[in-house]
Amino acid sequence: MNCEQTILMVDDSEDDLLLMRTAFDMADGNSLLQSVGNGEEAIAYLGGQGLYCDRNKFPLPIIMLLDLNMPKMNGFDVLAWVRSQPGLKRLSIMILSASIRTEDVVRAFDLGATSFLVKPSTLDDLAATLHCLHDWIRINQFPPLIDPIRQ
Amino acid sequence: MKRNVQPAKPSAAHEMMVAMNEALLLGSVRQHELTEASENLNAQLHQEIRERKVAEETLRKSEEALRQSRQEIERHAGNLEKEVAVRTAELTATNKQLEAFVYSIAHDLRAPLRAMQGFSTMLVEDAGSALDETGKDCAHRIDKAARFMDAMLMDLLAFSRISQEHVELTSVNLAKVVESVLSRLQPVIQEKNARVQNDGPWPVVLAHEATLGQVLFNLVSNALKFVAPNVPALVRLRTEDKDGFVRVWVQDNGPGIAPAHHGQIFRLFTRLDGEKHRGTGVGLAIVQKGVERLRGRVGVESALGQGARFWIDLQKAPTI
View 1: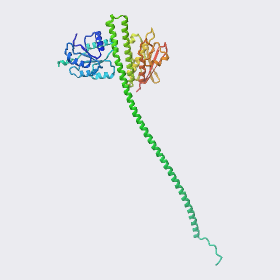
View 2: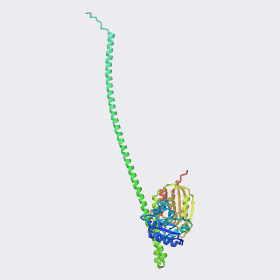
View 3: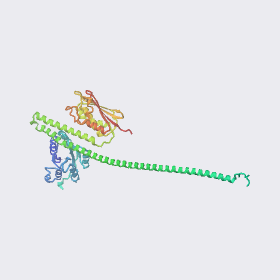
């Protein structure tokens, strides 16, 4: 398994994380799914802080699936933070939100989101979305990131 | 003394004096008359002046009263304007709150539904061997119920959006919208082996593209859903010129709708079909609200056993 292909999911809903993990297995792609339950942990993960300093266990992701609606630090805050980090700012960030409001989509892209995906309401649709995601990973050219740990 | 005194001839001087006397007398009478006349005239004039002064005073008082009334009216108008502004601001705020409320309710309610749908599916797939037919059936029903409620929430969100959203009418290419709707419905058309007759013609209309798309999508989607048994769906789309509007017809070959129900079906959460077709009951309410925002009209012609012919009237785009 290619260690470079880690996808980091950030969502405060345990149910949605579990469903994503299940869909991941169904979609059978060539990537490893890591997950965190809030914005602060997402930043800790990307920054390699605390237990996330073990990059063998917690590799830097090539894609971050980011929920918007989280308490304290929401998806927009995390997005803005990543885009402000010189080594991490080119990370592909896909908003994965239940929101379909235009102003949220606009704000996400204004803050530099790579794409905006709406959470599908069925497991099958979620697996289909992941299939698309894996196809996209295959054809997309990913920019190199500078791991904050190395700085 | 001689008696033979001839009476003196009136001398010229005497005559003149008499004449003068007469004249003076006459003059004095005249003068008296004149004085009387002029005194009368004076009195008259004074009277007229008094009357005029009274009239002017009355006029002045009326004008003053008019001025005060006008000021009063302007003051009231000013107050009214302020009140309207305050009420409008309140209404706008309430509308925004309502939109946010509807949105967050729908948003929050969809999350547990994802869980219900996903985990009931996983139940069958991962623990299917431990479940008997009843167990699997239960899981399947949970799945269906969750999907249905999600569909209702999505429709409610669409209804709320169409009601609240700022809609600006511009020239819209009707042909393009119809094409887009039909292409989105391709999977359903193919699955039902339906025939869609697109007769057009498709002029340019004055509308809001997203709203129009939603309206036509719902009408065609319904037409594909309501089909007579054992007959493939036949949907016909055409337009005609009607009283200066562009009337779009969406015809189906379904069971038809009794005239008694023609008004009801556009109401929120009103379904005539019960369990069979499982519509959310919001589709036609969205159509009506959407057409309202487009400043058009909607209606239906149908009777039981005759299929249904829905029509919407759209504004014509102004020709340059």
